[in-house]
Length: 140
Image (cartoon, rainbow, N blue to C red):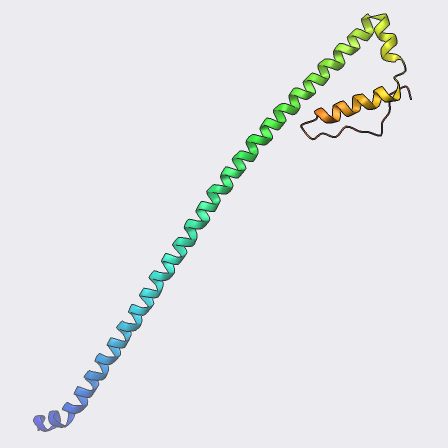
């Protein structure tokens, strides 16, 4: 009786076993394809990350260069401001101590001289600070 049950069930068991093996093989193939796709995606993303890191290093270098340039510009502007202050103070002292210089400093300056001095100032400005051109001398 057992042999008869096993004899009739054997083809079904064999078919079920084959179906189970085919299903497991397909699952293994699907997992392998997904793994390969994940590996490719990781490689792609790693490449993108490398490019982004390289760009970030370039940007940091640009920022350092810009900061150094701005610091040098600030030092130059400070030197210019100090020179102007020293020159102004020297002229004020000269005007206070020398009566002839005081008369000259307080006197009328021809318009052509005034314009010429302003042009000299503009041509020597390497820091980009504009000199007002609409203002005249104090005596005008």
